[in-house]
Length: 283
Image (cartoon, rainbow, N blue to C red; front, side):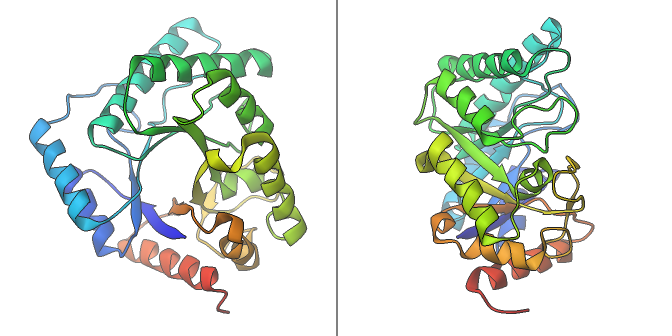
């Protein structure tokens, strides 16, 4: 398994590659703009070219772009829904421009709608973006913790969206361990992990499981609390991550850490832990 972290583009796209290299990452994830704002300035073509060259020379990959926080592709409000599709379209184009491998999107919140209506809206949003744009960047839906009216907390919901989108070679899922645990999946036992992976196989299919977000969980199983913490220091614990990281069905994937970062040392420590657990070495 390859490992990476989410890195900042605050000092520019090329600097993000340098940060990932300095941390010893195999891969990395970024936002492609302000994650808490709607406005996007055009990407600088020279910077994009430099990023693509630096990334290629570094050997790092996959490169993942995560959608910003504001768009809601399941929104009940028509104005927010249309605004969200436009924002997702714009960010997907930017991901394609930098030649990202994956573009990760949360399925959003249903609000007062039924889950079925919300899932239909997500599918329409994804299909609209992919129909408008060509590119090799694969569009991934990420499972959520299931808080409030969040959709996509369970894999059959994401499977329904992917089937409706009907672009199997351009879409897939990203499984976040914290979100899965908070949504009720048991990741601390072999039986629990087998149940999750069997669900992947039967509802999604292995070819569409493309990426993992590796995060320990502050909340109890089934709490719907989306609070990440350091690997081994949460409710999933080292035993759970040892099971996940040593499972041969997941061996070919990339795991991106989204653990708390107050200093670069935090990422270094978490990367060291997942690599140790992946080898089965006791701590």
